[in-house]
Image (cartoon, rainbow, N blue to C red):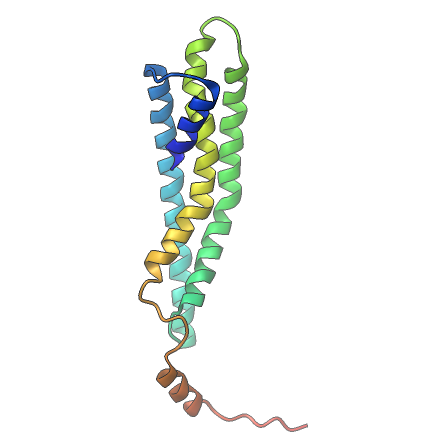
Length: 163
């Protein structure tokens, strides 16, 4: 998905495929893969924390808990991802606008990375958590099963509110 942004910007600026463009795509693929893997690590860590909390409370892990874990894990990665994109853009935009000697080659390296970082941001912050939720939530109950909810309600101590 990150490569789509690079291809789109290449087309928009009218650049042809070359060795320099391929180098830009290789660099983009490395950065996109790294940020995607780190997002998955954070999502797994948050999922483990929420599962442990559910077990400590003595209740089943549901889709609502999964969504909470995804939000916790994904929100932790927003600032680092934005900082990565801003740092890469700050370094590559001057190269893209440069008109000096050798700038033609350097522009062809920078263009796929600039376009790809935009689409990589969408991938990392939106698409990966959404797919993670679909895969991990495939067999989870949306809420407690009716039989289990009824048995838990029957075994819960009754508390009378006296005012």
